[in-house]
Length: 573
Image (cartoon, rainbow, N blue to C red; front, side, top):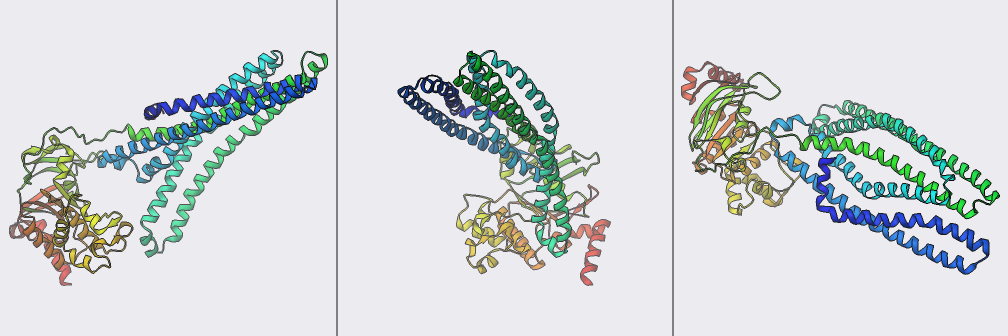
């Protein structure tokens, strides 16, 4: 909480204003019982109507001041809490954006979404309540005690019994309830995870007729959340009846002893009424304190989850100070080895090769051989474990991260599109791209033809994740998005797997003609996709088996020959 509360600094003045206005409201509330006692003891007892009216008008004025203080407190507290929540959400989102891939693997997507939404809302609400209730109940509690003692010190001895009883009960209830709130948030993560997976894969679920299974899985997670939430609520529900019992018993005691003192003439009726009101205010303040503790306990769990993300350092440090001396794409791998953080076995072992500007270097190998891992090292989604990768002679770790990635265009196998028009999605790769550049990129990606056939052409709005487009169309739009930035290095990670051979051939021809200075790294499964490459790197179990062009490898590389024969055999069948 301490780390997050630093975000309150920009709202210091509004927070102070909220506290001061709450002080005004509390002072007015504490005055009311005394004024009421004066009406009873002096106005009604003496039949002094003018005094009753005068004091009544004063009570109305005090009430109005209290209303102004309360409304003002709510206004400034809302500004403070909402601003705090917005800043914390932005801070958390920015932190997530800075994460390297291994840190994104560490936190589940559903958990990050919960932290960005529900957890921040919990902390935001506690800030609002702190400025109102946590200001109100200590002032009301202390003020009530002072006013009660000033009325009748002997009667105030009732509080010596009431307050300790409530404090002990509160301690044991909170001790049982606090741990449950952490479980509630974890179960909420699980529900969000099940929801996200099901909604993202709803077409697969329907295709495999697995709706019943998914419903059962979701219901299990949902019921677990419900069970722990009910358990937490049941424990916390004990607070209210317990406190009401103590409050009512205390009022009975006050009326009993107060009545005795009225009969003996040591206390007046109005003072008994006022004392009862102060006792009610004191116990009400304790009830607010208990409710606040419950909210704080849940907010602390949320705050811990938020700070866990904020305090997680990315393994890929943006500490480079060197700028690119050239926009050419001379790429060199020098004895590169890599293993994932959670694994001790290397995914890549002693990889060395050079890709010259304008060359197409293809990476071919079996599933799990390390092809995608090789590509993820170039934009520093992960950092190499051993060795180095050089861009135009400079180690990429010495380059500014944004400058490095600005020279790289990436097209993934799973095309990711964003809400907006087709033009928006292509221009997403380079916001300053002109219409001519957008059109040229679409033509190079062989997307122009199908785009023009759409109802609104380039202004067609893409549905959620591009559901109104085929897999091949989405891949071509993703390629156009990468080409429009005219990168020095173009990474294509099996990004034409959903297009036919004729379209793929046209794409490769367009790349040679329009991206002649771009170094292309091509990961592919199909032998036809790599046959025209300047270099073909054959990977097996994270190691380079051979490097050469198609003719060289078909004559000497057993692994390449086996891949070639198996795919040609499948095509013949």
